[in-house]
Length: 123
Length: 407
Image (cartoon, rainbow over all chains, first blue to last red; front, side, top):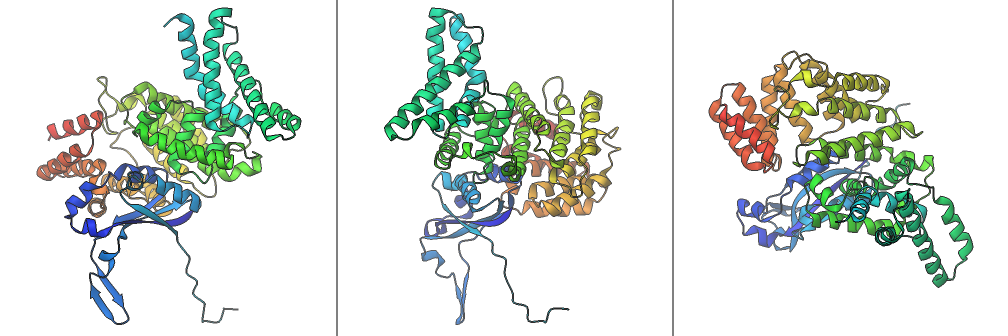
């Protein structure tokens, strides 16, 4: 199976105003979904993200970053295993947050990094 | 309800899905919704016809034949509209019909449900619906989902079936073999759903477990099975052996330690061990490892004499190849009984920081139980009360409440 990241995108401006308790109380129950994915061997890990962070560029480090201004920012992620991208999408469609229209999910396959080897190959 | 209506109703319950499935299998020109309509129609015809002309000797055969004719008519009609070479199409369609919806067909359909583009949940839902013939409300009950949620999944799955003719792809063995892992998973999940104490409907749960075993048996009898199929069968048989002992005489849930081991079905354990032996392979699948764990439990004389060393080893291997916080939880519990309490608590404490697992009642009830064994009554109570809030299942709640009372 291949690895995918299901990125949660939601209105950060809206959830930024909530306390963490309010934030998670307002969303649908995710545990059963995660459990069913774990039972079927598709779940690897995942976690919500805090709303504010640091934004790093070559010019320095900014607090908070522009994330908060983006209407649909990244607010969490899950890493899953799936047969192919279509199945990963089908899994994302069954996410309670997606089904209730609470948030959208971006499905991204993991890419194996290719580092060109600088060392000569051993003969 | 009069006698005939009752009879038709019973036939409907037992055969609706199978006949729908056989129509879907028979022709790519029929989509699931049409097939359901046609079969529904045939049952209605049966009701009126039988009242007038009497009940035929082969009742299922009658309905099957009527459904088949209705389907043929429908296809002819559609083809005429499309003005395609009608003869060849209809003939080849005819050929695919067997005389009854056999188990082989059930297996073919199971492989169709294992389409790799469907989510695991949808695969299970359409299997329950089209292969095992469960009604939507029964599926919702078995999977602890809302009827609306099931409908949504079915709607998407149906669209996929229609668009890509999923149920109809030529099903040569070679094309099916890559789907075997998904088929295993579907059988495994079906068994699990039946085995969980989720639904209070005991009969429904037993049926799901039995159906999963039957499907697995059909798979073993086919040419498609591999070593994993044997391991999966062993795993389910080990668990079946303990089926009855999980509840007390009054219907209360019992954990492994409290179960009366003399109730465990030794014949099933013997059979399961045999299958596990036959399943030996170079690489161990998750079914091999889980079956091996179940085997250690089933063959130890008492809870105290359990070989926790072997079990922790098996869990460690399971975790390495199939990482999951839920397996980690079981690993930690095994570590505790093995005597490595420090590692056990460090894993459990780590899991508590997992945003969702901390909301999971089994984590908190495990923490409660282990703290109680350590003599930390106050902590134990805290975790158990938390766990009590996190499950709404009557049997689970009663079980946790009982543990709290015993503190």
